[in-house]
Length: 330
Image (cartoon, rainbow, N blue to C red; front, top):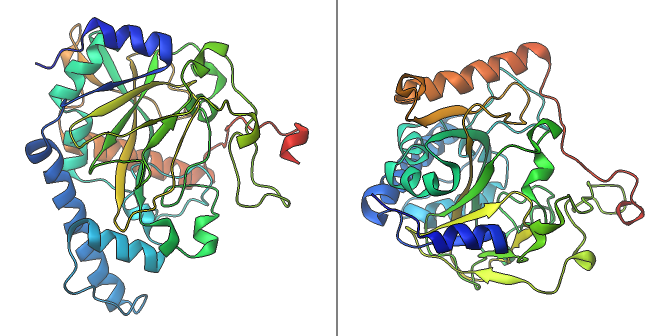
């Protein structure tokens, strides 16, 4: 069992973030998910070639290098196959794609990860459905329109606070962001950057949405972010735990390789998830073990039901809390 020292609890409370080292084993906990993603990508490449949608078989490339080249070539066009949520801004179709495969489910409910999070959340833990896959090739290799894309799944991530993407009902939910690197995250390849103590304001800062004047920007304007910015380099196996009000971004990937990570969210079970019909699902419960999702098929059905509902109803509500009337956002 991996226990979080008391100092990490204090650091999360005081600074708005904390780094837990060597929580996961790179070989047994992380590499299987990398391998699974690569196999899914290789199958996708074969299918896209059969359909005439691409004409590159990417022979000779494997692992993160294969992902890097594929994303450089295709941008966000097929990235939904590897994201672990359904985008709220999409127009729902019956063919909506997301990453629903067993090794991802295994990571979400990894006992070592949950043992560490129990120190922050207690023994009743649920998975909040707001997750993001970040696979970032070298920024210089991406087309300009991708570099300037507002989403930031595969390009630089602007300053923001995660509570911005929760409904008001979750303002008092005990929820944390868990940042999981799949490979080494350095200042050179685009590690996370935080503003310590920025969560202590207790409220959201100005968040702008893309507009006619700033089409490629959403998030907190850099000019109003504190200059006290701390980069957080981490290795595979480490995790970063953040308060959902902590201001953070990611540095530009100036390396020659891919930077790959996941933004995961965990909360106290039976509290509002703040994600519309997308409710939190229980991953650990000492009081009611039968309530836990223990099989991959449960997680798969959970998302398939959401997909079908949103397709039938015409789409999800988009409740991100933009500062629509702020002069900085016009």
